[in-house]
Image 1 (tube, rainbow, N blue to C red):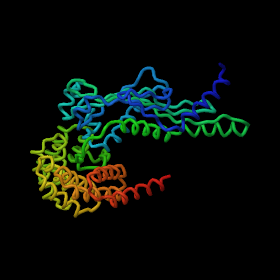
Image 2: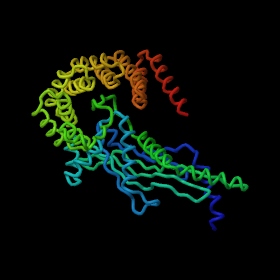
Image 3: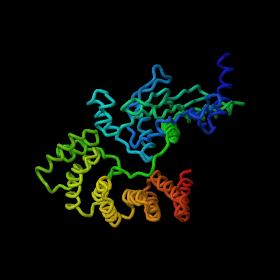
Image 4: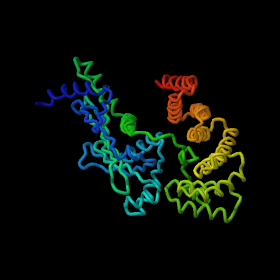
Length: 412
């Protein structure tokens, strides 16, 4: 068939699939898709259901060879980062990507050793099958595809697997000279840089949505914002060096740099906090608590320090002390979503649904105020779960739902 005859067929298929919602195909339920078009194929294995993971570490994604268009390591890193962002919304502990890369290099790729060092027994691995754009004058296609597997590091048992290729199509079948011009314009506008980022986000969101979420668990890192880039000139300060090493995943180096700061000046609250935070990330809560307490004593109004004090006490099972610390953090900043949410988790796990509902509601409002809409949705989901037990929270649910709906409407 000639190219002239083939192109209308391609455009017709694009019209059929480009605007269609994805079809979710559960292999575990023996479901069958529709011609393989826009399918999100997945399977949750019995091994996952028997023992759901509480932590998932996302390994660097490999690239299928050959792939067309050919993906680059930078492309694979973008997909990995998007998967990390969407999985972080679930009630699973995550491990920062830089930390994974640092330890993975140290252990020469040994996954069991990696899992032991980062204290995370489940890994997500995968292969980029497609990444890039195809442009044929009147037709364009932006696509990102990936094969993923979630496996238990100790024995290689597959817990979950998924495959999807997210795509955006542009172009139209021209009926006249004006139609030709508009078709070219539509096809060209489809291959802008932001389009591939949007498609990457669609890919990650759809695949992660097929991974079952766990029970309600606390947020584990008292520093919610991503690490700020360190200016080269600031590296003369060991505390800045410690921050940089932590951002790069070098926990041992970060601790050594923080200790060097404290040896010179034991009143540096930031150094005590960083030391405690690294120890918390390594789950050494016994050593972390004194460092966090020292930071709080030096700067009592710092909400990040109070958040950390609450988190370390909750991890040790000292829930009353954790709630007291979170209460002080909320008093200092009512929009402290971390303190609200973790207070709710403590109440929920203690069998106090009314108190949990109030705190989840506070978390939802706080996250709305600070613009963290993903965590606001997470708090909303937890409120809906509580509603199923008969606790009257409908007005709280309507308030947060209404705010999220208004925000979505403004964006569109």
